[in-house]
Image (cartoon, rainbow, N blue to C red):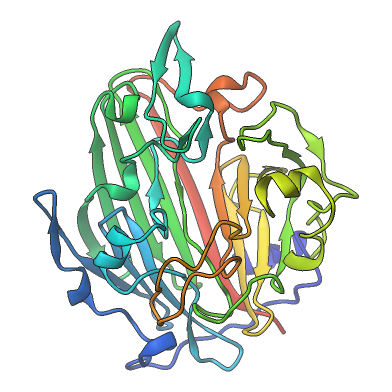
Length: 381
């Protein structure tokens, strides 16, 4: 069913080919799996490991319980050669020591920004840890990306991760029990399912912060990738990257990806919103969020790899890697230079607890938060 809905977003992407990776060792360097031993370490008294998922086609994902990170995802390119489409590090030391703290991680308790690190819930104001002055970003200084999650490999295609965020962790109310399941399906999709429950009313907004390059990690700029986003509005930001609270139409602006467009085609146009974010780093208001219809499509210009996104979330933060500065040495010996990766973070809107017109992120005590996102991989014809 997933393959049939791609044209609802962008009919310029022809039906995707069925494919599989060659069996056996996919090789090293740009095409090889990461060594599990590079992730065997104890952090804050808990064991860190690297877990391998593989479907019947030989597509392979590697995930560490340090931050719940997606470390590697090997899919075939148009020449049927395995391509790692995740930009990241080859060891846990890389993730711990780098300035790129969110690469591949599950972020929370609140993905994206909360203005001035404050919100009021049920008449009480909560002060969060301000880690991106003047705001709180991705849950605070020690968000979920720094946690060692309890991991259980359910089978060769599924990994379960659990974490307890205690009351007032980074300032958020309530003990929040979180469960995330990564599943690599036989239609070549990576499915990420989130659940959370709190013993007290709180706010929750979870996502995965994977950095993608569909031409393969270390392949250079993503500005020639082609993108479609099924949204007619976005939420503009102020000078501190906080939404103004308005919804603005994107038709006729550089933010219009309703039809397939090259990322770099309009990224340097004279536009205040582009200037504020140094490129794309904005929340798109999705038209659909039911998993039955695609919300976004991206295609690597060199590889032919097509990634189609489905989600139950109302928003998509599209980020073009503007703040990547080449500070970090990545998996294949290349640095994370500016705009060599992009993100499609499915989530609720930034600063929703302070924005009455945005979809609510309130989670009532005892209620179950649920969210699912699917990244499906195929090839263009």
